[in-house]
Length: 268
Image (cartoon, rainbow, N blue to C red; front, side, top):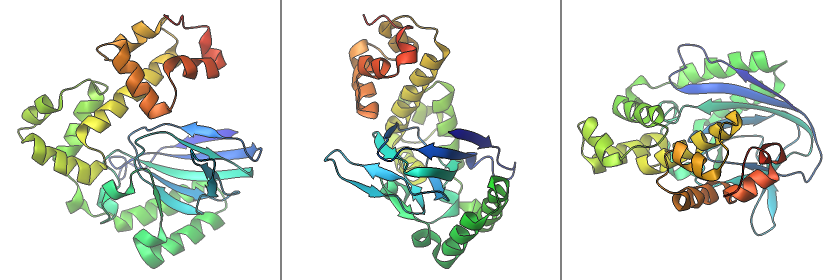
């Protein structure tokens, strides 16, 4: 598989984290587990459609193009032969200025782009699928998003709250955060949900979970206890609970299944 990142134009970087593409071949039935990361994605399949697998053993094909809302738990997907995928990864608060839909209603689900942007969405899908390459797809999507951008929909307070949560990797008390922003907690939570799709506590937990995953990639920790405390968890039980909720696996199971990482941990 060939995975590539593309940097958004400076006019869009406050809304878009990155663009990425994935190309290659994958055997039908191969399943990959995707974890929550606090971001919403706009996805285009110019290769064969991916399947989404459900806990009851059923599956269905993803649409040719769609927006996938915030994940609150893992999902499992898989390719079917030729993989060709291009995606826009929005900043946590990045989708709202481009559409009037309620981002919270998209959580753990997807919506086809024609249902969001109508005829303009259908035209965008056709242009993206017919593009000669991913550099051209970047140009097409940026032109489209700049036309859709509604600057008045930007919520500077929520943006600042997201930044403050990210700065401490999710290890923050939401009551204290609201006080620092000089806003009541409930009012802040309503604005946060409208812009991000998650409430501040959910987003902070996901941010902390992602930070723990990044620490494992650095291979600096010898025990799960060290990892839990370094990730901002008060105790190992709390760490295991969040890890299982977002990944569907205990930390021991996760590292056992990701064999290259096993040697870096002693499961105390």
